[in-house]
Length: 328
Image (tube, rainbow, N blue to C red; front, side, top):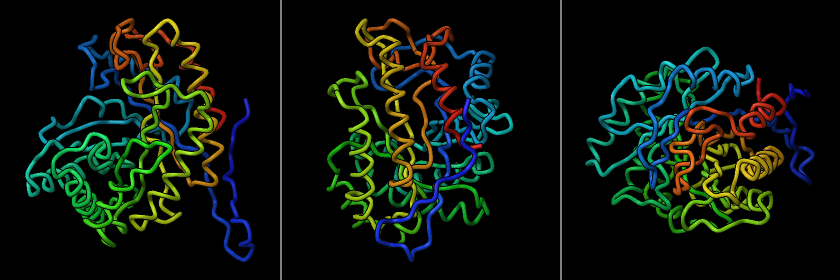
């Protein structure tokens, strides 16, 4: 199995005098649970031993390997994912906003940076505010990113990067980005260490259309984020894009495990190809196992494994792609 051991040097066309930018191989990760929110039903409880064994297989010895984690203000600490952080694994933490007052929200963000910072590579402040807007959520995103960055600097968490996630599409969310720019200005732009994109083309989710050309969708969407959205908020080419969520539900006979494997493999290879142009540094799968295998809800069937931890084909393919394409 071929292993990528070196980054790729990228030089902009017509800019021979400019210093080349090194684009490393992708860092990979996964959300290790099954519950997907939205329309998910109550599934089987997590089995920590089976989760740990599955993660060891899919990780393929690569480091860092990211575990996607979701917390809100008032969530217990430490949470259920902390015991999964064996050497080489780091958290990609989402701090969800649920309408708290701004002072309470900022206190929550600062506390979570202090708590999770030592074991966390990335913190996303709010979740998918561009398509699931909370009242005052744009202000919470902007002020939360600034507060989180200040807390990370104060605590000397030099490795920690602060950013936010959006559901990305082939057309820009111009008004959303304009609002962030208006609310945050230069201080916000200077605090953003990455932009996370959640990619679910043809995934089976309600309201998400089928996408015949998955690779083309990935190419165009990442270009839109890089060239049409991020510049609005003053975010330059040095600010990386992270694919924070990507998944494909096996909720119908036509959308079975073989189709999932085909679709997600196409997407990952497209992201890997585009990383050099669009400065994409990571890809995370959503999610490890189904919440309820065979449920009629698309939300219940995103796993690379069934709800009793039997691998689908994409489980083995994802492990192989990490071994082949991943960062060491």
